[in-house]
Length: 403
Image (cartoon, rainbow, N blue to C red; front, top):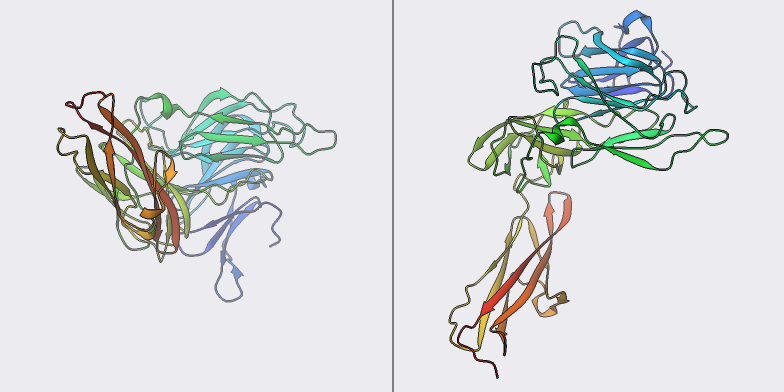
């Protein structure tokens, strides 16, 4: 077997690598020993070789293949006893060098590409199309997708994007599209557009109050949210080139909710290779939160990273001054890294201290205001980061008379 450029390679649930295309026959590759190709072929529909198409892993062992000069799409489920490619419906137009981006509601957004070739802006396909996998709610909010999934036409792009273009999911749930061009006599598009999927027009979004920066396989972790949550999904950070983004994959995570706390079970390594993922929580309307980026490997920690600043009460209001104490608390903090600032000015005497004191007093007009900030590094397994929190503190002296 001699694969061509821009392979579609996916870590499969059985621990092997699935070479999904763009050859006519998909195959497994075993990484044991010196490696070997599997003997079983999984032929694409009609024996096609969809070069300059793309594929995405939209669920556990589930792959969608689109484009490559075709309007027809196909899918395969590697978790069933006898995997085989089957129809995933038909797009409005054939596409070459398009992009396919996983979305947190489980759908796949297909953008850009050309209906004839991969380099000329004409005839570019500007309209975005959304594929809803079987059984998931349609973007209209009425019904669910059938056995082949469902394609929905969405808003067109303003700029043609073909060869060397890219599209990636952003943590806020939008999709960045950029690039396109080959130099020479072809137009190079050095600008970008941002696409807002339908779920961003369905009302208020749930929020994530706190989440860990890194978690371990086999160890539950917690996330806090003020909302009632229906789904928890994470999507691996994108890394797209030449219409391919093999890095992205979607995992549906099992969880329980007790009040504002979600207890989440991470996937196993075969379904979720080590790396960074965008964690989204979704409400009953399918609206996702903004993501928290979480790393998973064998060294992470499951406690949310947070940095909280508490302020002691003012105490007496009869005098001219008062002393307030500011205390920094949090999980996984590196105490020696703590730095305090007051009104934007670094307070070196507080370096490495979890608490500092500030005496407030004034002449007129009876109040005293300070902006107090604390910054600290956190460490979670092999991962480090930076956290900052700020509070505006006011002391009030009602009996103080101006001088």
